[in-house]
Structure formats: C-alpha cells, structure tokens
Image (cartoon, rainbow, N blue to C red; front, side):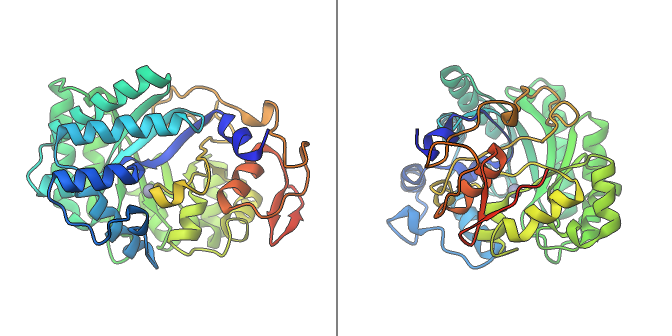
Length: 361
Ligand SMILES: [Zn+2]
C-alpha cells in the first residue's frame, strides 16, 4: 500500500474546515458562470496565488462570491462531504461565513437550509457526519456580528430547517487591526443561547488576542493559536486547562508564512508545551491537492468536538500506515508538508530537511 492510500484510510475528525474553501475548482467555474461572477483566470487552480493571509482571503472571498443561493450552498456542502469522506472523513465541524452573502442580500435561513440539504445528501451517501459553526466575519465589525447571532438564535428558536446542525459560533477573517473585544456582545448572546464558541486568534496576532478569545469571548477552543508559543504563561494555561487549538499547519506555512515548515514552527514547540493540538490542512482547492486532511484531538475522550458527540477515533492505537519501505518508523523523504504532518500523527517518522526527526512523546 502506498503512503497516500494508507493516509486516506485513516479515519479523520476535522474541526477546522471552512466549507467555502472546499469548493471544487470545477464548481467555482460553474457557479461563477451561473451567477455572472467574473474570474481573473479560466484555470481555477491558478486562483490561489497569494503572499499573505490577507491576499489569500481576497481569493477566498472571490470564491465565496460565486455562491448565489440555496442550491449553490447545497452543492458546495454535498461535494465537501463526499470529497472529505474519500480521504477518510468521519466527522467534521465546518465553518461557514455568511457576512458577505448577507450583505449581498441573501437570507441566513436559506444559506443554512441549503448547507443542510447538501450535508444531509452527503451524509446519506458516505456515512460521515457534519455539523456547522457560524463564523462571524471580523471585517464587518461587532454590530454585524451581533445581528448575525441574533438572527441565528431567532431561526434556531423557530426550528428553521438546518439550524439544528449549527452547534456554535466562530470568528474569522483578517486578524490584524481588528479588536476582538468588539464581538463580546455577539459571543455572550451565543453563549446564552447554548451555542458553543470558538474563534480564530493568534495566527497573525499576539498572545493577548488569544487571551481575549478565552476571557472576553468565552471561547472553549481557539483556531490556530500559534502565537501562544511565545507566551510561557499562556502556553501553560492552554496545556493545564486542556483548551484545544485547532491548528492548521499547512495554512500557517503556506498561507500565513508563520514558519518555513510545520515542524519548525508550531509542531515541535507545541508538543513540548503539552498543548491539545488538532492539526488540519488549509481549506482550498490548491492546498487540498497536497494531501489528506486530518483532525483529531490527541485525547478525544477529554476534548471532544464542540458537539461533544464526535466519534471516538484514535489513530495511534490502530494499525500504522506503511511507509514507502513497508514498515513504520522508516525514513521517508520528499513528502509534501501535509503528508509529513499526517505521517507524524500516524506514527511514522517526521522528516525535516530530509533528515529524520526523533519522535517525542
Ligand atoms: Zn480557519
């Protein structure tokens, strides 16, 4: 069995996935055509050209803009489940970020209903299970965030289609220059409504933003949280309180340039710090080509997903995938970043710069 097949067969729980970013290249083109959205290139794989998180987000927003209505959201969601299941997905808590669509006149109820339509169809076909996290787009400010949560809570109380899948709220988009405290009201409202809370912090912002996410927004987990590694006290708190970080090593390396390699940036440091890490891949068609996604807290019984009902999946206790020479622990070179990361999780040696890195517990 080759490495790619072995990695695909590992069952996976994914806690950091943006559904809009999973759109197939062909779907981007077809939806853009159907909704009259001009693309800068006829080759969608060429869309993802960026030099920073913010320039990546510009592409991400363009892809988002191709979603014109309920049927489009359903198609996106369905294909996302099918494509994930092909790489071993069994459970996912996926973000959707409706701010730009709401500003363009779409209705939150239709967006959620469309996503639910597609997820249900995908689940029937694959057996995977997918829940939703409604992300507040930081760029739209605190008032828009509060209005979004108010509408979400209202729809849930009314039993609107698909809202039972929305298990939490999040906070995404550009981190720099946006004070997260302006979203306190939105997060408080979400908490009172029984929604779980998470937020993107610390990919491009200092540790204080992560503390704000925990102490002001009441987050139960943090998405990325990379800068924690530079604050010993916060790092210890994350470890002691078992606060999960949904780390996306490929995203950090490929998009945010937070390190030259996953191993050299957060992996080694966070392992030493004893964090609960849940590495994942960035959600874009371009990055998906680099390897399978994977998502699982190392101690799933203590740190289940937001839903608290994620299937128990413990890859390290199962058979380890064979490396290119057919046994675990063998030196493998030339893997892309995602494969190296997954191999580390799966129990084969990590390769940094062509040399095997000693495993740490
Ligand atoms: Zn994210």
